[in-house]
Length: 524
Ligand SMILES: Nc1ncnc2c1ncn2[C@@H]1O[C@H](COP(=O)(O)OP(=O)(O)OP(=O)(O)O)[C@@H](O)[C@H]1O
Image (cartoon, helix red, strand yellow):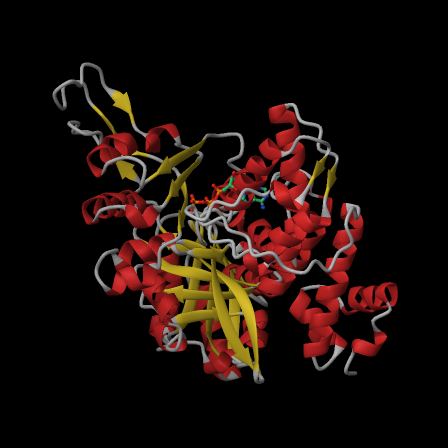
């Protein structure tokens, strides 16, 4: 049996008709569930009633002045809209959770049921903070009801941990009063697949980032997945790993690439100047300020601001930066007017910010604002297989810069570079190649061209070379690849596990095993 009856009541187009309709219900002691009022009709939904009472009700309607006709209808307009919305929400290939202003879950779509392995009936009406009780970073973001995009979320489902990207959009009325928010959750691996497809065709944003080791490949994929959002990115990694290059790639891949990319190295200028650099100053705001100046935030409006070495900011500057990130407004030094700016922040640091938060050297609230998408750039020693490519790349660069003609790189040279402990990462490697080229007279870069500066830490340990002298770079790369695949196969239980470790497909490993005749090294 149906639970409700719905009527479409056609009335004359005059004031008070809705009241007359309600009066009929009131007289018959019936309460209605919903009412939609239009200029010449009312749609009403009420609980199912017996035929006898229904006939009395209809009689009353026809006796009422101004009511023209009454007929049963299937759904009220808002119900049709709700059904359409539900269909759309379930058709979108994302998890959607809608939360009302009391933080209660109102919508929990099909994909959420799948991702969290829970039926919506068990979740609807629950407090969202309770739902995410074991995800303190998400609760922290939700608590402020501030919009965010693409924050990583791990969900355990059937003993397997999967990675998702979660975003929040607020529901505000015309007066900016909040009525709740919508959380969307997308499958990170799915996003990665799309990123991979783009990556295959990308010659642009990553053209200056040399290396295709699995670790660098992973970073490039991450960047492709998040570049288009406006979320803050925090690039982490030792000095010289290429954080600025990656920041530039994010910018080039973003929708802001036609606007400015402004760089501020927070460690390079004294704290007293950072404020005027970032926010600008009014004429006469301090001695010597004969004219006013726009700050970097204003210059980057609509674009991207890269805050390098953000861990070096003083507590006072951190507070000022936090204020801009929170309300998006700046005020010039000596000025009174607040100005709205729209700037995407990419920050970078080689410091242990978590520890700095613990020791009160870095503000926790600023840390959370900046660390929306953390991306870790690996050390050079964790991706030695990139060294031959980097060497080749820098050699070509310095050939042009110094008018040299180095055509060949001795295997001993590469071997030494690959065995060195690179404290200064790619920057140090670049410097060593530059100096070596200055020492090189002919067209072959040899092992003995590497300068030995023990004071500056460049003091290579000579190792037995696994390469023959005068090998071509391609041959060296193949040897390194073979060696790495053999080593990983030796320590992995299966080809699939080896493929996972190397960050390549199962088929790629099998093809390489055939190419290098490595079948005997597999434990499978
Ligand atoms: N993968 C790479 N391919 C080519 N060049 C690279 C790569 N990584 C770094 N470099 C070069 O190494 C140098 C240092 O890079 P970058 O300044 O981006 O590092 P960083 O991590 O920002 O360092 P710091 O933390 O000291 O600011 C630059 O000259 C850069 O061009």
